[in-house]
Image (cartoon, rainbow, N blue to C red):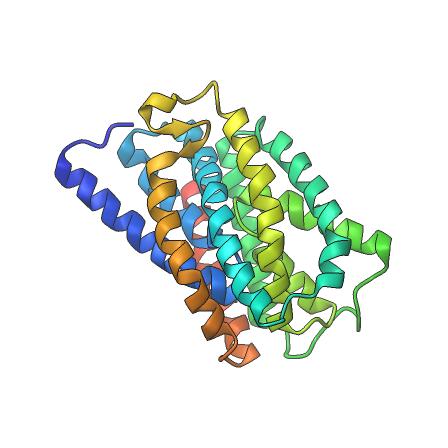
Length: 274
C-alpha cells in the first residue's frame, strides 16, 4: 500500500473519517451496517493507495464487512434497548442467513471484481426503486411466509448482502417491510442480521484474499486494516445517533432516505463498471 507523502496520508485519514461518520449514522438510521456508504467510497479511493483494478471491489467489500462487525453491534444494541428487534423472526431467519453468507463468500472468492460491482449496483437499484416508488402501505402479504419461505428469504438476504459487503438492511429492510413488518421494526431486526452477515463474511474475505495481499502492506486478506480501523472507530460511535433519529422520524421519511442513498450509489457504480 503506497500512501505517498504525509499530506496524502492526512487527506486519506480525513476522507476515511468522514466515511466512518456518515456510515455510522446511516447504520443506525436505516439498519444497513454502513456498507452502502463504505463500499462505494472505498471503491473510489483504493486506486489512490495502489490497489490494482482487479482487486478493487474485493478489498472494498472485505474492508466494509470488517467495519460492519462493530458497527452492527453498536446499532443492534441501541435498537434492542428500545425493544424494536423482532426476536421471533430473527431466530427463524438466522440459520438460513448464515448459510447464504457462506455460499456468497465462496462464490465471491472466484468471480472478477467487475461482477461484484455489477451485483452491488443492480441490487441497490432494484431496492431503491422499491423504496422510492412502492406506494405507502403496499405489501406482498400480511405476514411473513412459513418456515420454508423464510429460509429462502434468509438465504437470499445473506448471500446477496455478503457479496455486496453490506449489512442485512439493504436487502432485509425492504423484504421484511413487504411482508407487513413496520419499518422501524424491520430496521432494528436487520441491524442484528448485519452481525450474522459480517462476522463469517469478514473471515471469508480474509481467507480468500490471503494469497493476494500482504499483511506487512496494511492488509489482512482483502481487508485494508488502516481503513477499517478509522472507519470503524467513528461509525461505531455514531451508530446510536442514527438509531435515535430513526425512532423520531416518520416511516415515509426513512423509506425515501433509504431509497435515495441506494439510487445514487447504483448510478455511480454502474458508470464505473461500464
